[in-house]
Length: 252
Image (cartoon, one colour):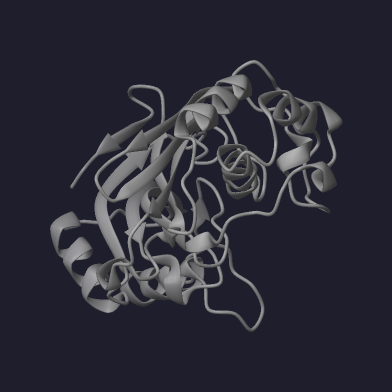
């Protein structure tokens, strides 16, 4: 039987989502917990990968069992008791056998959070930036250009196992609050390191180091060397994953 978990995690202590040799990962912790509870080897699949230090407010994970989970409430309570404090299972769903938590996602949303003041309570939960004033209006103009393009090879890490670099970006918006500057971005898919590279390049625009014209030229170059440095991982959050209505059914 196929089940889907909706989880959240603070990625500070992990080398990303995906299992790696000799590395502490979110997927490894989840597999271990589910295997302990269900009494058999459980392998999970995530809706997407997050890199070292990146957080998730919403991540979906699928797994299969030979026997149904009879008491979902007890299952969730026990799983959350076993899991480390920085990983939390919010909900349990069922799905059809042909459902893919990764390939059936319609869109994914990320936020990159920047604090413009030093705040000890946001340590490892945002990127601190308070050196120079940023032209946020110019950064938004540059962000608007993203919606006009499809190929984002310039913002992708090298040596990634993808067939193409095309993404459809639906939203790219800067939001200002009293202390925070938040970049919201939604797309059908993302390349490895894409959001952090985009934000790093947009910040260069806000500092006046590159123009709007230069920003578009970077996209058209289709070369990672053309883009600017990626921002640190601690400010990045996977915030929302969308599926078609009825794709998964909530149990608990």
